[in-house]
Image 1 (cartoon, rainbow, N blue to C red):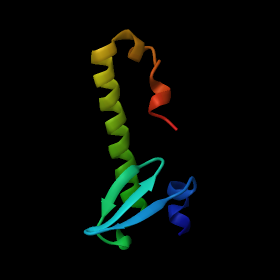
Image 2: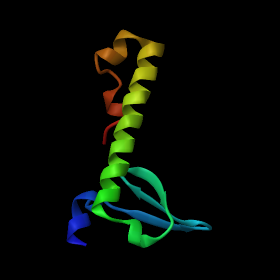
Image 3: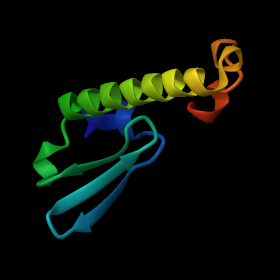
Image 4: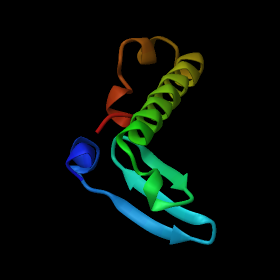
Length: 81
């Protein structure tokens, strides 16, 4: 459990679903797993990287929609904890 501490220290929610589990942490947001054995440090790294890519894409889309305000970082607080 110690190896997962950095990923779950702000809290973790695990919800049983029909096909496995849905996991939520602040750094990862929601992700699905089939079995609890999938909750490894490596899996959390993968999910955090996915979330960071999603934030980058959101910023790009906002940049296209709102231009210079996004480039100036005016929306940064919407996508960070």
